Amino acid sequence: MNSLRVGSTGCGVFTSVQHMIRMRHSTPSRIWPVLVASLALAAACGGDDDSAAPTDDTTDATDEDAAPTDTPDEPETPDEPDTTDAADPPAGAAPDLSAVCPDPLVLQTDWFPSPEHGYAYRLIGDAGTLDAENGIFSGPLLDTGIDLEIRAGGPYLGFQPTPATMYLDDDIHLGYVNTDDKVATADGQPTIGVMAPLEINPQILMWNPEAYDFETFEDIGESDAAVLVFGGSVYVDYLVNAGFVRPDQVDPSYDGAPARFVAEDGALAQQGFATSEPYRYEVELEDWGRPVEFLLIHDSGYEIYSQTLSVRTDALDELSPCLEQVVPVFQQAVVDHWTDPEPTNQLIVEIVDDLDSSWVLAPGQMEYSARTAVELGVVGNGSDDTVGNFDDDRMERMVELVVDVLGIDDVSPDAVYTNRFIDPSIGF
Image (cartoon, rainbow, N blue to C red; front, side):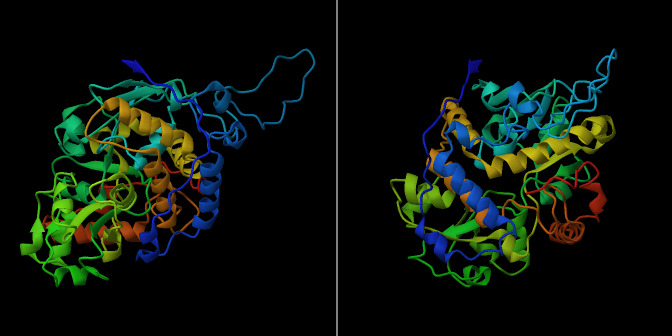
């Protein structure tokens, strides 16, 4: 395997994309002004030693970072040994997971290493190694006594859905599964979400604003625009059932490449991520090089949680002792990454470069993604002060909606998610 290390960088600069001014999106999370300031600071001096996150944050896989620095010294007891309980580390220290978690702990993602995956890669940091042939990045999970193995999805799985992969390979402990996919597979390949790293699904439909002036999803349905998407996407069925788009508009032949969008001068509505494609098309894609406009699928009323950290339902009891301790570690990683994304952004760019595939990422795109995720409320605490938890009312509403769209037997919300392992004190 190749050893991949991250070096220091100079100050980063966020690229300004003018179409953001015209975006129509949900009201951002109430914490985004604080995070924008943090991200701006990280972008300005992300590579400087004095801009690093506090040493008690779970940011990088080093002993120095994992060790607590602000714990008061225990008073000395004459002629008595130190009685500090090593099994109960002070606040800020990484817990010892060696007795409760599998080693390595295996996380199956749903695509190539991407900006939205940053919090997971941060848990390994520059201590990791890359198996480029199989798309696997692995290394110590902070100073917890176990390793974390992050597996890329998409072509590395033959584009097989994550739940199916999890049921074929018992070595996978955690996987990224969207709310709607959980409902769709609840009968045959049930999974249960234990953390929601993203508050809003960044999925979009985008188009050339010079070709169309869409303001709503209804506008798309009233046009002659093709809706170019991946086949089998439940949200597309929802858009059709809700009357937002016509069945004859849907073209499920999208393969992730920009060729058709460019060839048709953007005169269609194509799926993408708000945190990725707008920057890529305007700045990185020489054949396009212009702004695109978009609508968040979330704003249509389809408010699923995407890429939720999930386990096989039949493995929940066995993994519970591990989940009780490791889920808060993942929660803290979400806060740490989006507050100071630069170190992991650079790492992911280097990993993608070493994979040497059709999937490409640039530093500017990573910076754009971090900034946009905060501005749109893609990351945040939601309706409370906790990051990573599921909103009960929202889940009940979405499960019922997806059941109706798919025309399947009722699924209990309790069967597809739990907040049991969430630490409510962790948030932005």
